[in-house]
Image (cartoon, rainbow over all chains, first blue to last red; front, side, top):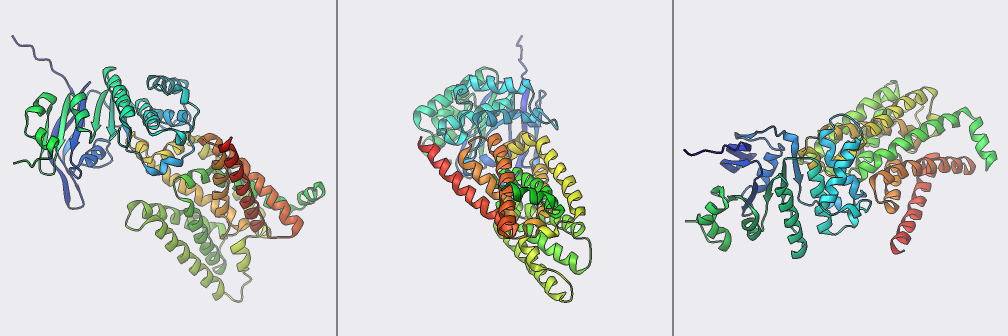
Length: 242
Length: 273
């Protein structure tokens, strides 16, 4: 007798179509994200990766199809690590202020933070080794430190799922490796990870599932399935798909 | 010095101006931190021009100035936010368009009412005399509302100022808080406009935030320091204005500009040591 282990999907994407005005960016995309998964989204520029991110964060409405959250995951329980934006670079904010702002989604209308929120912020700072930066100014930190601050803010916003948008863009190789280790550690602790990345080798190294998007087509499957598919050559060498 | 201060406090007109001014300075400075960091500094300027237009029309039509200016400026604030967020017209162009448009309408209205006793100068550059005791009551109520809302929503205001996309993605209704900031800004500007003048009121929003950002490095200290700087520069400006018989709006702006230079230098020294 074969026992099937039924894992409920944390997010199910079904026949999703996304478009801007009259240009379709993503058509009929379907995939699932399981609890504890490490999903890497790779693909060329213009294939709709950032549009997909917006849709997952409920910032963009699907034109067709659906995005369903299962397993008690609420829409506002996604921890999000955005791509850096320039406006933040001279912002006067201490590391602690930035990290604890991640706790806001569980506060609702209530003002200020509770002592539980404060502890949560400190714990997440400890996890990412930034406790000693607590009262430093965010704008004075290096790129790698800033990413760790934003990552611990993302962890304050969720216990279940984090969505990372190009987390290593602009970081040097050593800092990049450190950040990947931290993300792996977070994933091991039970948090599901979705990472949008241009770093193809890293995607192959760390992911459990891969979603590969090109302008015409897409692939979703486990890492092993991906390695056997025609998409892998395309991503490696930039060869044309037949 | 003490003589001047006691003279100021013995005049009811000046005391009224002081009360309104201190409250407005405080509100403007707190909101200013968020506005400056969100790159919305010019919204204050745009709204004050709209306020000028509204005041001018109210005067010509013989209506209560505040009753016309408050709703008009609030509507303009929402309009500016919408225009700059939907991206068809860029934010700075939208502000320039609305502010010059309103200024034009205001000047037309004032000049068409030749027979009436409207002092264009006091509308543009402010006057202590224009603060009536009714204004004081309205100002106190509105300022208390602004301060209370600011403190109550402080954590949200920080979050949407620092990273609006993250706030939205994690379920904070950023658009509503943006509107709230615009609403509070509109109220603050209308209250302060008659004292400071519509050309000068936006300096209360911008200068204190920029000063404290030179020296302090976290949001809370910047906010608190802006409030303090704003009240002190206001008081200093008033005293100078009284002693040197200069217009109070302009005097306050000059003190603010001077304090910016001081804070800039302190910031530079702090960086090198």
